[in-house]
Length: 102
Image (cartoon, rainbow, N blue to C red):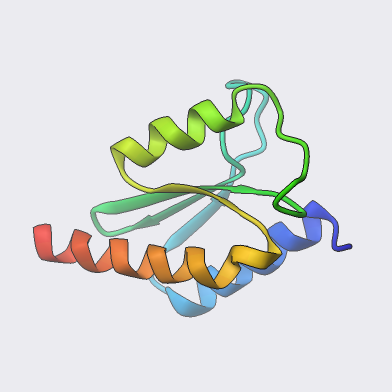
């Protein structure tokens, strides 16, 4: 099974490949417990992604809270190998809506 760190790196690279004008940040701070791992910024849109090695991987306290809260504000998902394509499709769709609302 791929480590979470390796998976994060591959997701960052893929986001940067698909969206070269975007900024992708790895959030590595204990400041807010459970805050998602990655922040994606492009134009007037942002997304937060919590990377997991597998769908059934252990979630830390507050991770679901933050993913749900941030999804209400913009876009946030748990992302793992078996849903990568789905999340990238949803992200692309959300970006399209963001551009239309501009």
